[in-house]
Image (cartoon, rainbow, N blue to C red; front, side, top):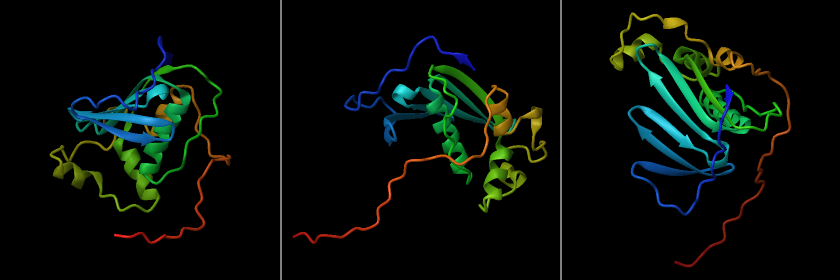
Length: 180
């Protein structure tokens, strides 16, 4: 992790989409997403840009972020964690800069997290065969780390604790009839 030489730029919500680009609403404003050559890039505006790619040969996932805030990095970790049944990640570092980050971790780790949460995830060899990957490859080739190890290798620490999190609770809805 190293400090980024430039700050991220906010996204103009009214700007037209580039070819192949999709627009999503994020918790802090619009997000622009592009999928190209097996890689997904998400421009989160003022929180930075994050790219995800998977390497079937090493069965690993690589994440590269540029101009990302620690809040943006925590949001990215939350999306990975919650995709596999995990918990929300909150930024409690106190770091206010923008950073360039690159981590790589085992896809097996993501599948194990999902299995631990009760998800019906197939075993990697069967899935690998269906995807055309070598079924006899080691489950952790090249020494890929877990997501936790990858984050800790950056000098950051993920720990479970209770924290105040904003939530929207709707306790009542009424449908008002409208004319056709």
